Structure formats: structure tokens, C-alpha cells
Image 1: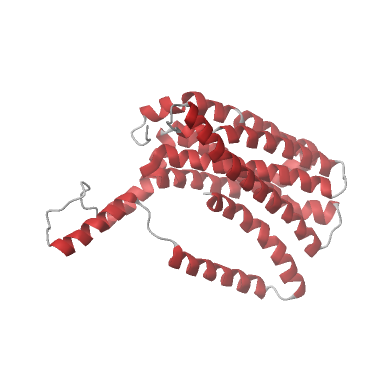
Image 2: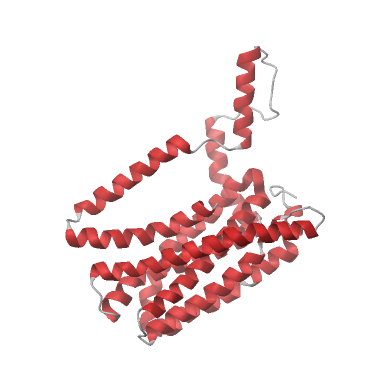
Amino acid sequence: MGIYTLAPILGPVVGPIAGGFIAEYTTWRWVFWSSSAVAVAIQVVGLIWLHESHPATLLNRKRNRLVKQTGNHKLHTGIGPINLSSKIGGALVRPVRLFTTQPIVMVVALYMGYLFGTTYLLLATFPTVWGTQYGEGQSIAGLNYVSIAIGSFIGLFLNFVLIDRIYRSLKEKNSGIGVPEFRMPTMFIGSGMITIGLFWYGWSVQGHIHWIMPNIGVAIFSAGTMGCLQGMQTYIVDSYTTYAASAMAACALLRSLAGFGFPLFAPYMYRDLGHGWGTSVLAFISIAIGFPAPLLFWHCGAKLRAMSAYASG
């Protein structure tokens, strides 16, 4: 889950750093050649090491294997035959249905979309901040993206250490019964770091303080974002088990739309409000969403899951 969370953040970080040096010291063609080579390498790794994990599919494969071994065609899994059109239809419709009918998916998708949108908004404004305001060259300006990577790795490590430890502790106090809501405490920590990081970054840029200060703010924001994203995605998987992929698809759709849309209004927001108040608006929104959301799940998550035809528990 940590790798799944980290990858969409690291891509936009590594790209500008490598692309800046490639474009400056070679030709623009190598930007595309290098990215294509990396994409092929990742696909090959996936084909070799990624295996099917969907329970119904694995069960059906086991049934087919036993039929071949025993010749008993009466063996069944309890799941009727599904044709290709039904599979495609379900894959397309179910995420939309989950988003429109499940409050848990809706709130997680909105907050996840906001975090991705804010991250990509900051990424889109980096060239102006470091190139124009701080007067850095193309390749050197690209190195500032490292702050996002550092913050993301710190957030991933802290969450890796804390999320399971807190979960086990709460599970022991709950007579050995674990529930998805025990993933929420790390979201409170992450939401606080997001707010602090945004204020730190915005007013550091506004005051044209030494370049390390905005980078520290971005690192704090990225660490908090990673903690929240990992906590939310783990919560979705624990809550929807069989339908986790569809729930995650609904969240991925909204986060992708936010990642596309947020950078579009960034120039106008910063032109009218400046980096200080512009980024403060984002911080205030993070307060309005980031703290009520885990409280909602903590107090009402079990009731919402009990009312759902898709959720477990």
C-alpha cells in the first residue's frame, strides 16, 4: 500500500529533476526516449512479479484446476459464470455507484482529490517560484522537487511505523477485534502536518526567505499528505474488502480530475492573492476537510459500514 501511495507522488518529482538535466545537456528527444525506457522496464517487472490476488478469480481458477484433475464438472464456486461484457460493465459502473451511494467512499475521494490537487498545484507553480522569484537555473530549480520526495519518504516511514503499531494497540484494547476505524489516528497527525506545511511554504515564498525554508514547508506538507493518503487507502481496503478495487477506482478518478484541474486556477489565485494568502486558502480548506473527516469515520464509520451493501462489518 505504501508503494501504491508513493508512486503517483514520486513520478512528478523525478520527472522534472531528470527532465531538467536531460533537456539542458542533451536534446528534447531524450526526454521521451528515457521516459519510454523506464515505462517499459516497469511493465516488464509487473508482468513477471505481479500476480492475481482477486479472491473470486483465484477461487474460479482453483475450481477449473480441480475439474481437470478429477473430471467432476459438478464442482462450483457459488459464483455464476460471468461473460466479458458483464465484467467490463461492472468495472465501469460499480466505482460510480460506490462514489454516489457510499458516504465513506465519497468523503475519502474528496479529501484524496484535494490532497492530490494541492500537490499538483504546488508542482505546477514550482518553475515560477524557483525560476522567477529565486532566479535559479533550469537544472538547479529542478532539484527543489527533491523536497517533495524527502517529505514523502519521511511520511511513508513514519506511517509504516505508526499505523500498524496503533492498530494493534487499539485492537488489543478492543478484546482482540480490529476494525477499519483503527487506521484513523495517523490521519489526525497527517492533517496537522499538511496545514503546517502549507502555511510554512506559502509565507516563506511570500517573504522571499532563504530557499531552504519553502523546501522545509513542502517536505512537511508531503509527509502529512503521504500519511493521510496511506491511512485513507488502507481504511478503504479494510472497509470494502471484496469491492476494494472498485472503491479505490472511484477515489482514483476524482484524484486524477483534481490533479488536472487544480493547476489550472493556480496562476490566477497566486496573481490575485500572492503566495502567502493563496497557499493559506489551501491550508484553511485542509483544516475544514482534514480534521472532520477522520472524526466522522471514527464515530460513524461502523454505522455507515453496517448500512452498506458493499462494506464489510
